[in-house]
Image (cartoon, rainbow, N blue to C red; front, side, top):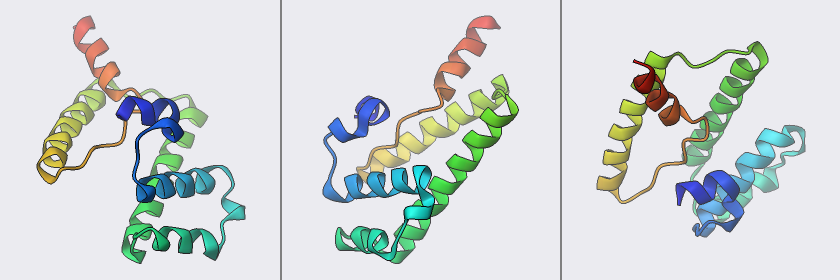
Length: 121
């Protein structure tokens, strides 16, 4: 599932609410000036609460900020940071499994960076 979402979320087997969240997040990322109250209402209509929408906006904004900082400044994630992120992601996956949900894909390849760091060591 995560691979489908990473490659093309439109082809993934998602719920109506998940699809709406990704459409909304994509629009916020690519054309933020085009966002309207109707976009927010669309999320409400498929079951997202205002608190959920705020959380979605925060996560979207954080990742957009991070990508722009890293890419804009030509930064790389240090190996130790990648290892910590991988450990945290594994813990999050365990918690998600307990709750019956899935995690978003590792679109920045943090897990791959950690594997490469271990191979170099």
